[in-house]
Image 1 (cartoon, rainbow, N blue to C red):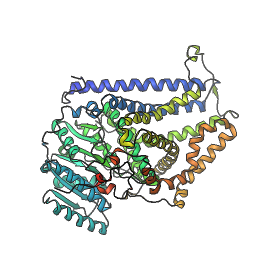
Image 2: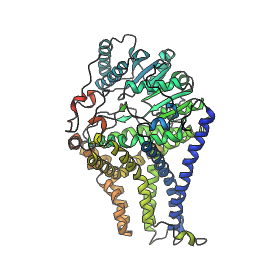
Image 3: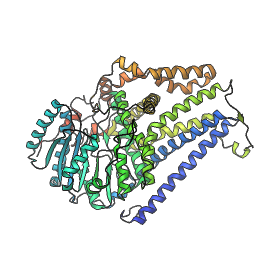
Image 4: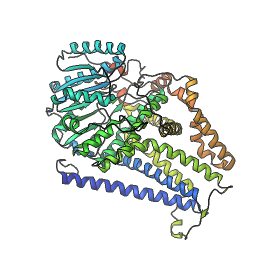
Length: 615
């Protein structure tokens, strides 16, 4: 038996596995960051080290840690996906050990979908498709379905009620399908789920949480239920969502990237987090009793954006479950688990505003007694996912100042205390160091492409898959500095005490007006002009290396308009580019909702988009 295939109820074996896997990761990080920082330091020490250069080394080391953890997490995921095709999720995550996919699920489960001023047609078609798929398994009696409405607009609520009655009678689900609308949506989604727990929580063993745009297949839901049945100490299992149903250029680029790379990264994440996993707020199943007993979230004291209700509740709930001694797992398999995503870059940033504020609220919880170290690390990584933009901005500013320092020293110089002749033959040139760092940033996409070649036909063929990947990588490189500036603005607003409004997410495509695009991207153009001027005057030979950053910032407004265009996304679809397997081989659990407006390419089997009649 593989030593990794152990019963997770054996705490000693699981503890040993945690130590082994995390020491392996830490060793890789220590070695990688040590090599990169040493090379950078010795390169800058060539003519003495100024205080400015010392600051640059410090910030770069922090950036190297961030880059290295992402690179090695993806590399580990790549190794499992490469050597265990079709079975990587079970190999990396012991929660699935011994899973019998034909066993009858035992736990009684509530499938809940909290909604807030959403498109009723989208919500109910998505819930219907999940419901139908569960009933088709023959184990539907174990599951009840809840749509938990926090809708504040009466006209939307009336339509919700009509659709709920139609769904109830169409499937004869009296007593098993429930639509509830709260009169007061206090504490947002957390309050919505707490109300469910207060009313119905004692009637169920498990709760599977869907987002308003989520769909899950019956077989996937059954398998998650079986995992909880088999592992009595498991408090939560997070499935990997796949993005679906996108038509705009931005949506299709993001959807393709998530489909190609998402499970590779989450496999690596599952490898070293093990039962210290995380929760992403939906497409996850949890054990109700410990959730009710231990996941009552605090209201943060004081005033300002870091006080009040916790906006990013999911990370905290996972941490609270671990503190109570229950296991939290990431099961890195996306089959049968779907969601929608923002369709343009500005709506993506609007969502990021709320997530950023919620993640920064976690800084006030880091010192909470009893939290597991990895739970604190999850919170720090959530903060860093946004704070890294500030880090990159500071590095860009410092690089510009270092260029200016060539002719105008900005601080005292520290001489090299002694020579390191032994190291000289092994030190990378600045250009080589830059190439290595860029390689670490882009290599996870190359790994994902290699794995994707195994099923290249589902992505439109080897040539189209390669072109799609190159197209996505190009747009990622161009938009990275654009997103960086947006995140800097969001964090700056938080530091100034500005909070965000909690509004319904925009889940349907919209064209971005030119006026809005130029207004929202004015800071990007100013940053490009300032940065470009410094390099042009002080180091014009470096401008080609800065070109991707400057290009993205300069064309950010036209790019935002193009990103929101469905005709561009559909044109690429018709050319067989940015295809994903769920479009060329649509699974039965995906409704016509996600495809009825898409003009399929010749590579797509249109007939498979049509849902089967209800039995």
